[in-house]
Length: 117
Image (cartoon, rainbow, N blue to C red; front, top):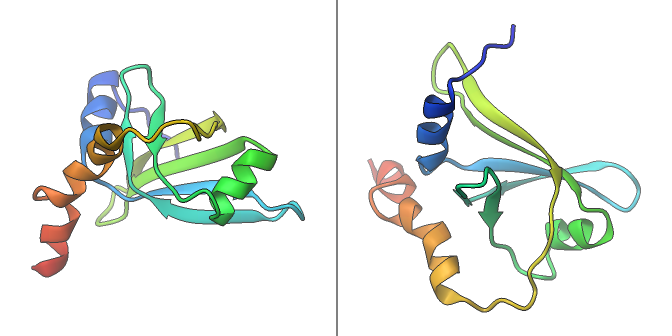
């Protein structure tokens, strides 16, 4: 059964430091899943960082179609947000502030703290 989240609940959920799952297409057509840290933008898109030589970056460069699942699997009812569309790579940006903004929620009381408890 699929349930809908309110826009407010979705926005609040996407602000939480959660590991997303990025699905891209390999050259042979098979699906590659990659865990990613992300930042949700006001326009509904997500931003994530990866090295240029990763399989995810190579796949997106070749075929930008992708899917992202951000979900919680702690206890029923399981819930999450699924995004489908195309990705682009901004290879001209070396904006350290933008990169830091992606990772900051995960370092400030987010996943790192949860892992040590």
